[in-house]
Length: 275
Image 1 (cartoon, rainbow, N blue to C red):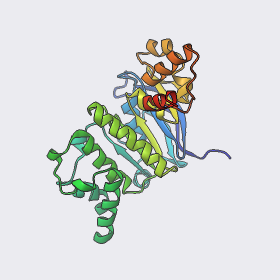
Image 2: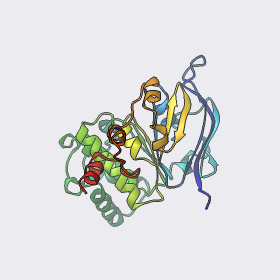
Image 3: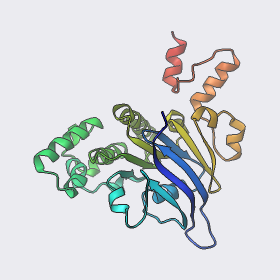
Image 4: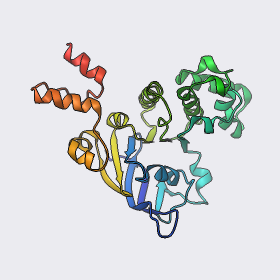
């Protein structure tokens, strides 16, 4: 069965100034239900691409299609009912005075009835583990908790695509792990949800369905994680590394201990070795 394209990026070029091109003729497809990570060194164009996909920026040239519909000024209102974005700084995106108000914000804009809205807010607060914090104000929350609230607000809108734009870059290791697990849980609960994560977290990239590497404004790699990260020396040449768990698996393979491909976490490796 042929996969259904949900996003098409065709010959995308963007520069903030005429003589400075950030993205240089980028093309790729993303399919319905995929979890795709976009990685690259600082300045490679990752966050610029996120803003183009959500039409915060307009391309210099090239086109983006969402479910076959060209993304432009005429279509943006309709397309924004399908796509949401979680930004880098959790403090900048907390809109409500409490957790409950913040999750409800997008629903209020859609004129959802109060009784339905309250049930929906509680449902999605539970999904992200924030149902016991509904009356908390933003200053009472950690960075990871604020990101969970932002994700709950997006999930409550029943969108088809969620973009995470460096959503863990300002979090501590515990917060990073929280969001990493939350994304996997979201995908498990809703296999048709398409997730695009622009990230510096190569451990997260290893857990995704597909990895796109941007380098010098171009698509350098576009493949499953196992193929993208198979050459550690090649990754170092573009200022990237390979996931720590893959380093462990490679060390074990050198000792003729082969860890199955589907095991992608340190915990999973440890459990496999203890069998």
